[in-house]
Image (cartoon, rainbow, N blue to C red):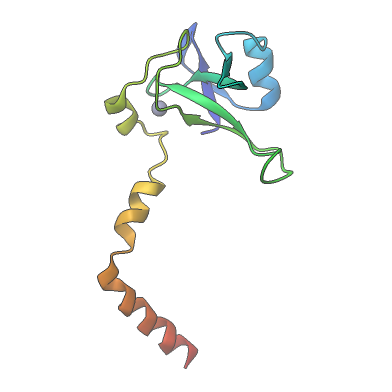
Length: 121
Ligand SMILES: [Zn+2]
């Protein structure tokens, strides 16, 4: 997701950029926490009030500097407790993975190959 919320106002959706996140949280705990020897950044989901983890793809995947938040499936001390049922009903949760499992049943594999072959021919 590209919005986040603060503990002080958990329903206000703030547009998420690295600059805004750091200026609003002052780079301080509990938003910044060391976890397993790694510094992680946390905030809240403005929709379901579950904790979210900040992910910066710049370092690992692209150079576009995309900074985004994903639901953290576990309690984050000082930020929020994780509530599974709220997460499952959250409109900001990414449903793509669930859909992916349904989208490709093995029975349909043959069918799409047929279509592909027809297009090639
Ligand atoms: Zn949510």
